[in-house]
Image 1 (cartoon, rainbow, N blue to C red):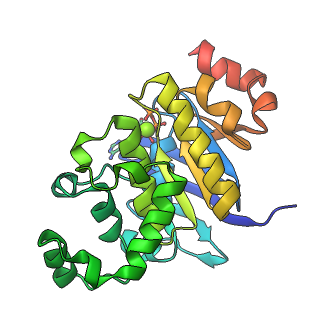
Image 2 (cartoon, helix red, strand yellow; image 1 turned 60 degrees about the vertical axis):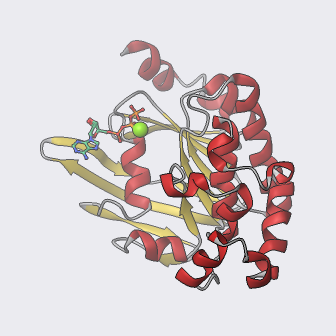
Length: 253
Ligand SMILES: Nc1ncnc2c1ncn2[C@@H]1O[C@H](COP(=O)(O)OP(=O)(O)OP(=O)(O)O)[C@@H](O)[C@H]1O
Ligand SMILES: [Mg+2]
């Protein structure tokens, strides 16, 4: 049996009268692609936000890599190797693909480094970082775009760049909320194929929320199905998708 890298125990979270999470316990195995599915408003994003430290749970606990992380601040959780990707912030889209990775490098000396980047002197600053960045870009098949400004990337390439930035920061687990949203089917398949390669080559773990099941499930090791703030089914995709409660949650509502 694989070892778990992330797990929650009975997490609850309410917003005023809305009970978004009513006691959620999940476990994500190291080196897996684990997916959370469920209808709109079932609590998926709330769980991601609790795990990444954006919301404090009302009750329950979150563990990562053997230690409790409940209530830690987002940047503290990130430093432990649990990255949640957001859209690349606006100022960074003017930077090239390579520069976007370099600024995510944990040992970058901050302001000075950023200033050097702007002046195009990054090469001298961090040879080691550049080497690491190219290794990651190759895995993502973005290396040919290294000096392209990021705003010129397609939506799908931008998602991969977000993953690249997480890998550059030495993330062991990457959480993404709907990585395939708004991406054409061909590229969506490409994204999930890259995830599988990264998992196989680097042992990195993915915990994803996704609505596009027809694309995502074939790349997934394990699925949690949520409905109304609760996990209603879990298991391998073939099993979960024929579970009566899952069928009910999707079609019955
Ligand atoms: N910040 C908030 N303030 C108030 N209510 C919230 C907040 N965030 C989420 N909720 C409510 O909590 C419930 C769960 O929302 P959540 O966003 O977690 O669902 P979801 O499964 O991610 O849905 P979707 O598939 O549409 O993204 C919903 O009823 C939502 O309206
Ligand atoms: Mg959501």
